[in-house]
Length: 537
Image 1 (cartoon, rainbow, N blue to C red):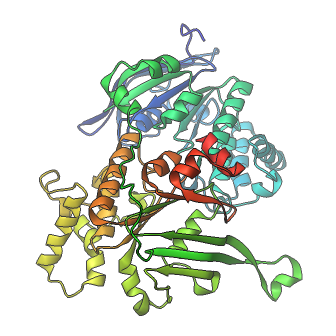
Image 2 (image 1 turned 180 degrees about the vertical axis):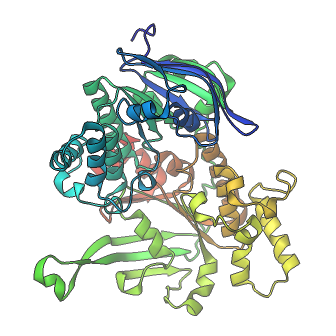
Image 3 (image 1 turned 120 degrees about the vertical axis):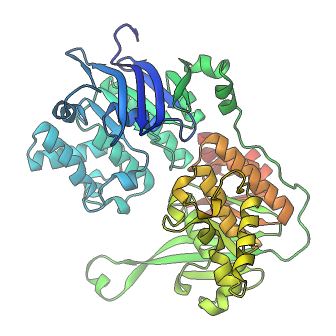
């Protein structure tokens, strides 16, 4: 598209909070119908830039200009009165937020939330807006849109929630869509579906898209042009094909090179008893039956069916599959977090089964620890680092005196690359004072301090950008080599499995459809579902 008449022309945009400038003299333009990707690491200023354009930042000092010209009038978004901005938000410029579970209102059905936009912006009647909401959900490809419109956000899958967010953003047919990491939390196949959907809707409506992401494969597939941000500044811009073929700036080249590397012990496992073994594992959840039958008994939803696997000492088992395939249920069963009545078959940690009694299971709790997907939500915001990391010692080694406990906390933090020399006052700091990668290192230290033999890693890098992901994976590989740790790795990122796993299990609808050595399953997949997952990646 000719850049002589851009839809959005941003010149010298700067955003500061107090004395700290987080976006510094950023300039770019988007033509009507164009797709521009804004890429960079966490903290580079991508999201702040988008929020500044919609004037959604509080206590921020914003300078520069952002002229929005829809062919009828040219308006500077940074200088418009608030009343005029309300007319533009959601109508001419819409936004898809990164995490739909927190962006959607949990007390309103999805249909009500979409209909609310239509009533406010299009002055439709309640009946008209309700039907329009159903039509919009159907347009995004959600099955049974009339039924889904009556569902609350927690009753939908991650992909369905993201589609509902897209339906809400497109309700008023905006001319510009700001999409902030719209596929980060989705598995590879859903990610492809959302990209195809955005592509289709963008072409049908002639809409321009500003895509904010750290996923370079997504950028290569979706964007017309790319703008690279580092420390609040734009360091490089260009056409997608040209920038990927010959990146000019060192930071862009660093991003391109940040792919997970395999550095694990490939020797065959020792002939030892598996740390974690499962045979014909079955997990069921009670669900209400329809009609009168539901008054007297409940039905059963089978989340995992007939899963068998083993993890020897010092090895990694990668579990992959789409959302709803049973991966997280498998992890919860391995951690002994499910009621005994819901788990069937055999499951043992070092030859011992979970007894589902706190006193009896306490030794196993020390043997197996977990690292969650999002360290920001899994670390208590009210506890300092010393309390967070030392909590396991207070439970499993209460006899330790306070000085010894503090020494072990410092040693565990040093083991994951966090020291007082780097971070003065480290032990007294709180999670919000660290970056995403640093918080994940704190979560690792918390798990390692009780000297476990097995770590359950539930999407440990999906919330991290590519360079930090590479660092965390290298740390996990080093710890495995040095401590002979075993990992149960739950992920939808095939690149992470390729870098980490010795064996792979592929789950679909709760059943193991393929398993075996990682090189065999990932290099020569036999099942059509595995082939589809790898193709989508």
